[in-house]
Length: 180
Image (cartoon, rainbow, N blue to C red; front, side, top):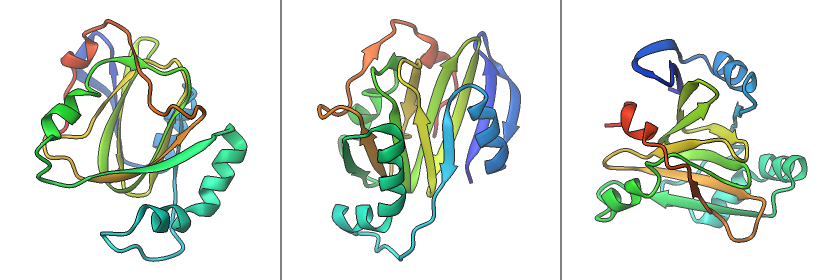
C-alpha cells in the first residue's frame, strides 16, 4: 500500500501527516509540485518479463508522459532479493541530492522510498506496484530501496546520459527513518 509521511525537517521523530489514500497522497504532493499517480496495465506480466514486454504493457502511459514532459529515453531497472551488491547499490542513493531533470519512476513491482526535502518539510513517499512519482528537477531528495531490495521500475529521462546526481552536502538523509 502506498504511503506518505510528512515531517518537519528538524523533527524526524514527529510525523505531521501519515496517509495511505492515493488521492490524498497525490493532492499533498501536487501542492508542492510533485506528481504522483497510479497506473494499471492492460495485460498480465510474468515475474520474469523482458524489459520490452514491460514497456509494451505500459506503452500508452509512457507515450502520454513522454509527450507531456519531453522525456527522451525510457528504460527498466530491476533488482531481485538476495542481490550480493544490495548494500552498495542502496548506499548509492542514500544521500541528499538533486538532478538537473525530473526524476520519474513507475513501480512495476516491489517498492522504494522517495524522501523529498521541500522547504521546511520532508515528504517520505513509499511507492509500490502501480505508483508513478515525478520529482521535479533541482528538488533535494534521497531514495531508499531497503536492505534486501526487490523492485522493477520504469525510468524516464530528459537527457540521454540517464541518472546524474549532484550532492547537496547535507546530512539530513541520515536523520530520517528508512525501509527495513
